[in-house]
Length: 84
Image (cartoon, rainbow, N blue to C red; front, top):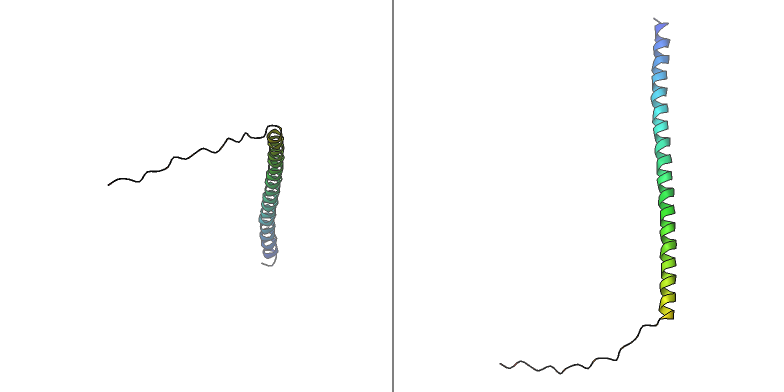
């Protein structure tokens, strides 16, 4: 009986180690995917920020080149009270 027990222990240990290795590999893959997603989002945010800043600069230059025309204030009509 003592000979069959070590083989069972080693088989159980191998199974446990296999499961552990699979779990660790899944965790590593998940972390890698998360890092790649974060990097992609960071790149996208940086690109959008650059586009926004460029647009604001163009808008500011356009506004400086063509100042808005201000019109004279409109005269208001006097309101008449309602007659009852």
